[in-house]
Length: 466
Image (cartoon, rainbow, N blue to C red; front, side, top):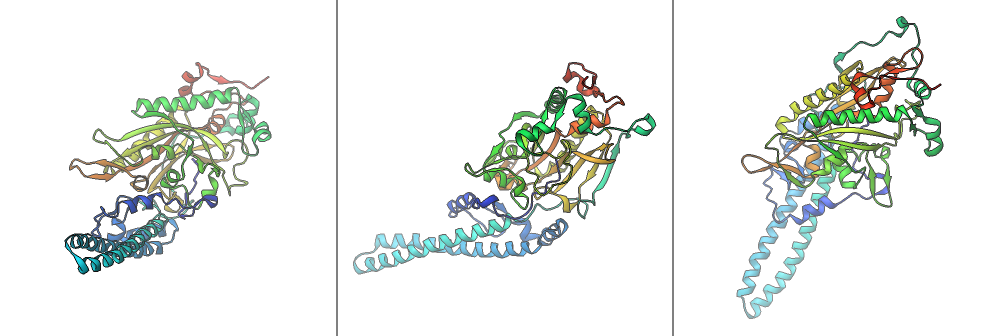
């Protein structure tokens, strides 16, 4: 929802040690991994692009404002990994051959062979440890490289490109009154109570009451209905996830402090159901023969919003807890760009449902989260601030998340390949802000968007409290 950059560093949050489960998984498969230098690191991490086109990855790092030298660090670590693996496999082959010789030998020859076998076993053990350490170091470095940018404009947060603008902002001066902001309207309608939210939970918490609660449910139910009509499977997702799931989606980086963590349980509160849905098929081979596998996740979301003090702190624009319906798609890498456009079209369809003037922007490379190769935002006009406010975003994460989480599909040739993942917002609490401000009347009442009326018992207007 907000432009939360997921960062690129691999350090875990608040003292949690770096999860070595992927390294243990790799170590367990060392004997069976046949890496001739052109494939992947046992499906744990893909190095093909780095080896064959390192300049492209360096250029992507520079476009993001990240460190391009990490590419060279990874390539050096990969060389060490492959050399260590070759040494291990050579010693293992010698060890197996020696075992056959010992079985056939007798007397002093057998004694000598047994001594050599014992020494060889220690060398194999050391080589195995070296190979494991090399693989762990290579993967740790690889986790610091963000997804490769695909088609995003260069620059930072202010260098987006406006793709289109839809609808016309109201001229409140011509209508003869100054618009009220969503907080004032919410208080007049008995819809938003931030003082009691702060009393109960602290700053940036709130209560949605009366028509406020009804409006949020209407937005989310309309979003879910639209998703189901489009063929998405509705899902109520967990809001607590394991570190490996959070890290696999790319959210444990430079902005890990913006994520709530339960240290005692070593679990994270999600800021979007994208995280849980990305992990839903982790370590699985899924069937995409009938097309993309799509889910619509409904969940509470939590964000600490660290470092955002003083920005959008009035009302419910930037808060610690909210609800959201999120689209999530697994598809083939070849179909990912087209699927991205489909998700964007569904977001625009939902914006039309609530009748808001908006624009679509193509987010610049330097403002992308680490997992996104490209991202489009839909921003609604906010009359009281005379600016656009992000309501939705949709990201093409290509194979970045799926490779980390081990999600693959079996192609027509029988081989397994990493899938692509994409996500996009269909409705969230923040939409209340734009709906109240854009549909307000001079007396403080708010006209209910026609597309939401079926979800509000046919109600056409929210009246101020007496």
